Length: 312
Ligand code: UDP
Ligand code: MG
Image 1 (cartoon, rainbow, N blue to C red):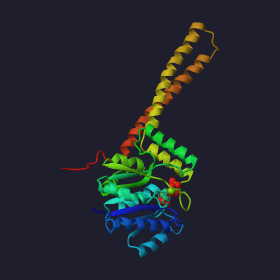
Image 2 (cartoon, helix red, strand yellow; image 1 turned 90 degrees about the horizontal axis):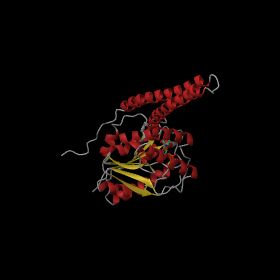
Image 3 (cartoon, protein in one colour; image 1 turned 45 degrees about the vertical axis):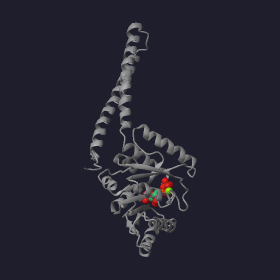
Image 4 (cartoon, rainbow, N blue to C red; image 1 turned 90 degrees about the vertical axis):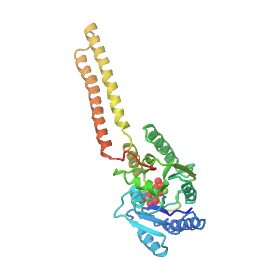
């Protein structure tokens, strides 16, 4: 069995790693092809995400050298996820693998992914075995992040980033998700289909610097939560409801103190009661508003309601 494979690689200012990456991936294709796992017209698609260095020039140079090297240039820096989506939308193949340009994800694992594909899996997640190569800070924040997402009810594969294989039709269904802020690692599990996981060790970046500084990482994390969960809004409603209930208790307590004992500072009851009462009422109102905002937000996504896997 042989399938046409496309490897999609988003690149943003990756001139330092590019030559090595092309060579490694082409060698990988050679191997897969020799074993008959992929067809000879399998290819690499490098998506230049508005790089400001020589990345695009290098891509062009390599497309002339090897016909299996394809290039796609975005007009500006659109972000990793969008670069990836552009590549997936354009690449015509039976199976599509996405991998970072810095080869932190072991390309050899693609062999195992293709094998799973031949067994009938349409989604194969690459999951890192350990985070030994990441800084302690990244390890702790990543762990907290995946936990929070799970807590908020977002289905997400633990320690899986954007190294994965998708079948042609899964990619076609992915196009139906029209949201502007696409968070692929949480959308893919929503698609369903037979899936599996392959494990690998994540290596440190062999050259160049990370294109995800803390600022971008935080924005990315926020997108992940706010694009998939209305839990933070729900939380306000709950808090508002509890405060509002509590305000009644306080109102009675204050009135009790004033009327029964009369031993309170003048003006105390009339200042304290509105604070509790209005505080609770306001929080509850914000929560209710939030519920409507959540509805509008969920509706405006226009996500597909279902996905047909097979028809008999
Ligand atoms: N990338 C991109 N556009 C961006 C930022 C990153 O296409 O705006 C690409 C980058 O070239 C790399 C991949 O996304 O191929 C992952 O980035 P990086 O390795 O810098 O992230 P890290 O591994 O540090 O999280
Ligand atoms: Mg990286």
